Length: 231
Image (cartoon, rainbow, N blue to C red; front, side):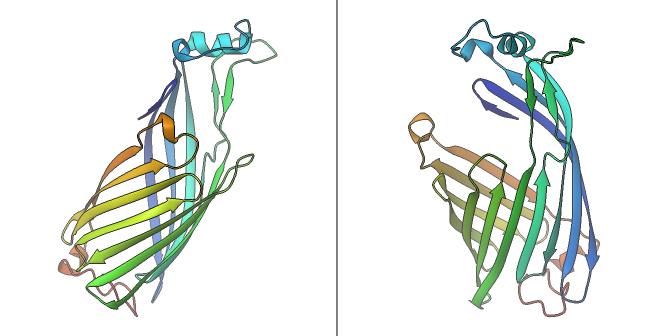
């Protein structure tokens, strides 16, 4: 659930991926489908033209619902990764005017978001591993977003890091990895662009749970790749 006045957004998604294993790398291919509700609070809007029928249809309806999808591919091992993905595969349209008129009004249409990401891990001491991640997001009609993140993993347990979205925001993160079952982390984003005076940043708490038939090699996480160096 996300809420940015006057918009509210609720989404439920089901995702699945399968992995093709090679000696020293793995290829993961995944997709998801989602059911989404987009709401608009008309009372919080100020209009230049209060007689605009398209605005009236959106505001009077309040909510519209639609399906969407996403997919991606990831090539990785313990030392690097490269990925390509796309959101809004279905080109979903939220229709706030469901009359049978020829000219439709009050339509909100999503567009594809393309994402490319690369990363690598580096260390001279296995107790201190530096994780690097560079990501670019392209959406037609908007500037390209570029993110860079750097995290330090200490003894494969505690980690902390920082990142930057060029011209938009900075982020800090810390967390802990439990080798037997998962990971928990907290991050904070602070805007550096023109929106900074109007928000106090965003908080995120993330819980990841791992499961494998091999029990993560009894907690060691080693042996998946031929030249594996890191857990």
